[in-house]
Length: 122
Image 1: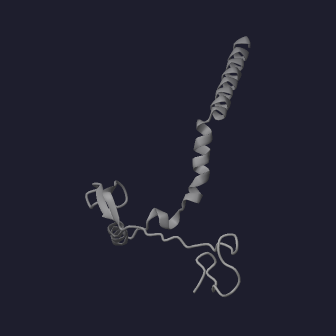
Image 2 (image 1 turned 120 degrees about the vertical axis):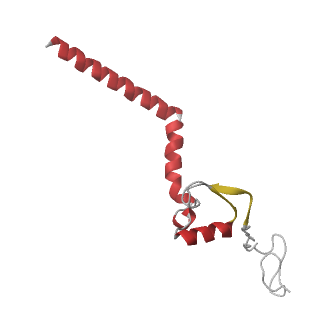
Image 3 (image 1 turned 135 degrees about the vertical axis):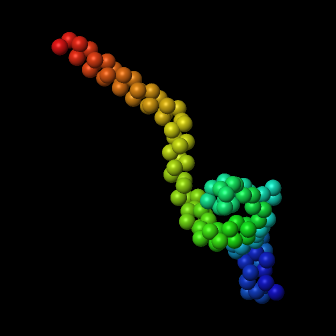
């Protein structure tokens, strides 16, 4: 028999809550093949006329990619590669970014006005 917490034989040492370490467990991850409601792809995997196609399973998308000689976006990129762009976009929406953009616009207007008044004086 083995311990449910540490997966060691019960005859070796003490077992139970606060007596043996809790060994990490593997989570069961299942990616379903079906796509409820379907996924409409409007570019890349369109039909021959260029019309969008709705796919109802992951394997249909894989077959369409293979038929067109394409690969899925997720084969090349992962979320960690797109994170810097998301962070940049969030910062640009922030109050600090808006304030800095406003200051820069004002500074450009002032410089432009100074140039125009300097040209008029000559």
